[in-house]
Amino acid sequence: MYQQETIRPYDIKADKARQVEMMFDNIAFTYDQLNHRMSWNIDRGWRKKAIEELAPYSPKTILDIATGTGDFAIQACQQLPEANITAVDISEGMMEVGRQKVKRQGLRERIIFERQDCTSLSYADNTFDAVIAAFGIRNFADLDKGLSEMYRVLRSRGQLCIIELTQPISFPMRQLFQIYSHTVLPLYGRLIAKDIEAYSYLIKTIEAFPQGERMMGILRQAGFHETRFRRLTFGICTLYFATK
Image (tube, rainbow, N blue to C red):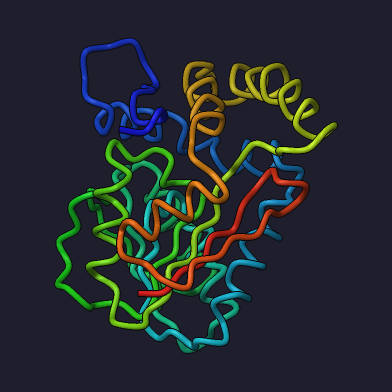
């Protein structure tokens, strides 16, 4: 068990998956505003860089794991004009926001949303050319099981592309990130989302989630090869890439 798997959003008697679902349903309609504000809109660039890594492989069918409000799926559509995306999440509240965004952008023919437990997907083996995930896998109640499912539904030689928030490792960014994440981010959560517990939880999972070389080892343990990672924006975000 990894440390972030023991962290739960609320002090209630419910398993982590159910609490995560409740949390994202609670903050769904303010999530995009907060996400872009907290990252100064840099998160858009992170998604763009991730899809640029995927583009040379020209995937036609993509599974977007823990899609949230669909930003990564929309970015994939914009940069990969021949791709169709299945966007899945445990939170119907988040996906409903995503459906409205996709409708406004005229992408309903290329992006479909489905409620799925990402640690127990309903899809057959070897279904997708690529699997992508942005800022979601650290919320898994069982990371190994979730990665195993990603591996299972990928076709042979398919690509896995993950971006995840991480702690910077170098001075002074590590210290600045600590100050920012423990003062400004909870304030945003309180004022905008009205759910300070949710944003306290998200910060704790960033700090606890395995990153860098350790994450490479976890991906290889799940069966992936040709694993690599790249730290973005001084290590605030990390891009992971691997092949089945």
